[in-house]
Length: 109
Picture 1 (cartoon, rainbow, N blue to C red):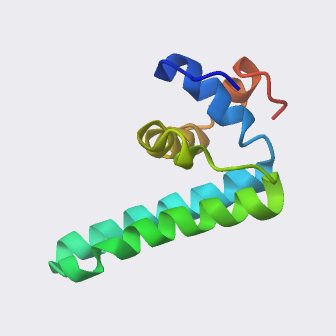
Picture 2 (cartoon, rainbow, N blue to C red; picture 1 turned 45 degrees about the vertical axis):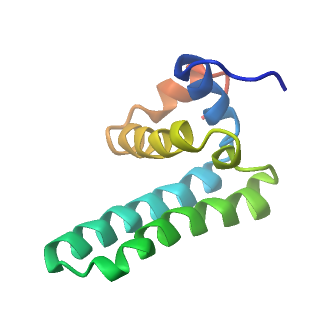
């Protein structure tokens, strides 16, 4: 695969790498738990537990790629764009616009 130079090219690639609904569902769980953990850590001031937010987010994502999607997570090649895309994907799911994004990327919802 050729190198991706900008986020506009990355987003459709990211969605194609998350083509199965179960993979996306595991990502939603992981990203949601990561956000919840981050909120609790900040609210309680328990900074020692901050790494737990990353564990929650990445554990579910990586397990889904290995067992469901059977591909290498984009995090390893494009870590920042991948992190941003996890939140963007969750946003589109929560707002009901994920189907539109998948169609634009050439992925059947």
